[in-house]
Length: 304
Image 1 (cartoon, rainbow, N blue to C red):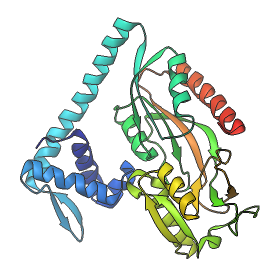
Image 2: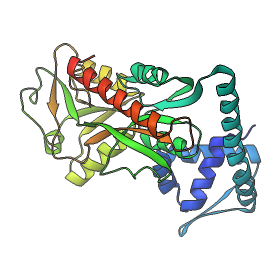
Image 3: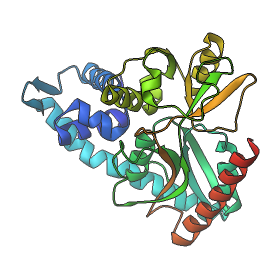
C-alpha cells in the first residue's frame, strides 16, 4: 500500500500539536478523518507511528523516521510543482494556477475571473472545508482559494497566506412556508430546541461542527439528521419538512422561506486567499479580489 502525501502532512501536524483533535481543527478535518488517515499510514508502514497516552500523543520510532523524511519530501514536492508551473508559463504565455473553492453558486464564475486575469487554471479542488483549503494554500499545494471563514470559530489564516474579504455572509434557516418559523422576521438558536435540522456530514461540512458547538453553548439539542453534502442536506430538508442552514438567501426553492438566524457565532465571511509566492502577486491579487466581489454582489442581488 502506498503512502499518501496527505498522510504525511497529517502526521506532521499531529506531531506538532500533540493532539489529534487540535490537528483536525487546524487541518479543517474531522477527528475521525484524521484518525482513519493515520490508521491507513500505519497499515502501509506495518508499524504503529503514534503512542497514544493520557498526557498526549508522541511519535514512535517508526513515526519519527517517517516525520524526518516527510520534512524532506513535502518541501521537495512543493518545489517540483513550482518548477512545473514555471515551465508551463514559459511554454504557454500564461501563468498556471491551482485553484481551490467551496461549492457555491459563484464557483464557475470564480474560475472565469481567474482566467480573465490571464491565468490558466491548472486544477480545481472543490472542498467544503475552508480551513483545509487555507492549509493547502499555506503548504503551497494550491495557489488561490475562495472559502467561507467563521471569525468567531476558525483560526486566522497563517501569516504567509494573503487574504481579503469578499463579502459578509449570514446564516438563514431554510424552512417550509408552512413552518411555524416561516413568517418570523428572525430566529435564534433557542427557537431550534425542539426542531428537526438536517446538516451535511461533519467530514465534508465544517458548518456542522460549528452548529453543534453553538447549540451546546446555547444549551439546546435539536434533533439532527445528516446528508452527505450541503446540497443533499437542502434536498433532504425539503423532503422531510425540516430545517436546513444556508448562506444564500436569494437562492430559493418553491414553497420554502428563508428566516435570518441571529445572535449566533455562525456569522461568516467569504474570503479569497492566495500564496504570496504563487502566480498571483499583489496587483493580480487585488484585481481578482475586486472581480470576485463584483461577481458575488451580482449573484446575491439576482439570486443567480
